[in-house]
Length: 247
Length: 223
Ligand SMILES: Nc1ncnc2c1ncn2[C@@H]1O[C@H](COP(=O)(O)OP(=O)(O)OP(=O)(O)O)[C@@H](O)[C@H]1O
Ligand SMILES: [Mg+2]
Image (cartoon, rainbow over all chains, first blue to last red):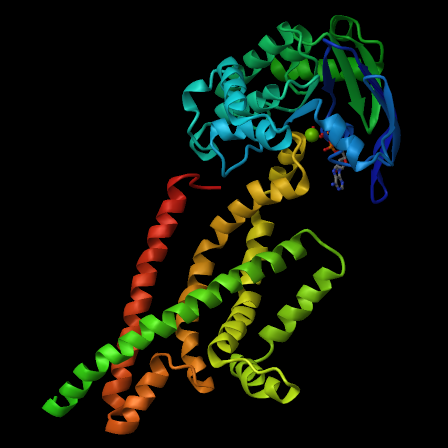
């Protein structure tokens, strides 16, 4: 469904992405792992054109795009089929929970208000936030805000949802509620590309793992073999560090 | 206080107050509305970084903030007729006040726009909205809320600045007071009186401002 080849991106002289390739098939849940500063966020941002890559190609639903010289029109066409969940939620602060979810439907997709609200309520029910339709983001906990952000992503029927460390900004006791929503989505067959530090999610929910370091993909494999017998030395080390950190 | 002065104060009060209601307030309200439009345009042009226009906006702000309001009023009312542009006093005053206060308000609006978290724009893009849709529905409303206290202050300042329109023959409160004083020679009493009327106006506005701020805080609250 998405095939990305050789994405490069530098900030000034610093190479944040040095030729990254990845494939996502429909129904995949792909976890992107890697130490801080390895370029995970930059990769997701380039894939959704929040950052324009210096080079690379993207095949999306069979159409090929040059990621550097892609037109605004193509960007917005691709964005209509995707959704993004941010680390710090980025809910619209001046809109209620319901409006946060309907905004992309009514304004960007010209869905009529009644239908948009029906869809929004359904999405909010899915994440357990349908009882807070009229609350403002500032009145919600981080976990609640992130669940609303997931509902906002869901409501537009995306073909794929990108998550950038969706639980990293949360207090430990709130992480579970967000992960369980994501697990439900995965079970329903939603295609997801998830940057995460949650090893349990990567191991038990995702079917593929991509390990990045220094702007490069070190290893790509299915999640079982990634954790049980990693191919690369660097990956082994990473898994060891994580396990010793946890236990 | 002697009886004659008291009588003068009573007689003049309604006259000055009516000048306030008929002239000062409409002058301030109209000027403020135009200033608001100017400030939003100028701030958004700079925020959106529209080339060419942005330089023009900086130039406008530079000129206006670097010259006295009185000079601007005199130029428009006494200066422009010599190049064939004759404006009646009231519109000339509205024009000057709007252009003048607009420059200051534009700076408040711009700061407020820049205070809106960057992620709001990105989230808007990710749900498929265009730049101008996000600007109109997400960023401007938030910036407006941030700028509200300083915009209210501008309006209160505007009420007082309108007194300068007396210098170009607009018959607002100060000019009315001068006219009355020309007959009765009671500067102390009359200027205390008109000062008191300004104070009343501004007090009411201050109440409205804190009411507005509470109202805005009630939904949304902290950032
Ligand atoms: N806008 C930017 N300007 C300059 N450097 C940047 C910018 N964005 C990212 N970088 C740099 O690029 C590198 C990769 O950053 P990125 O945020 O993609 O890492 P990450 O893998 O997401 O890390 P983390 O796990 O901490 O979120 C970092 O060294 C970072 O400093
Ligand atoms: Mg990151």
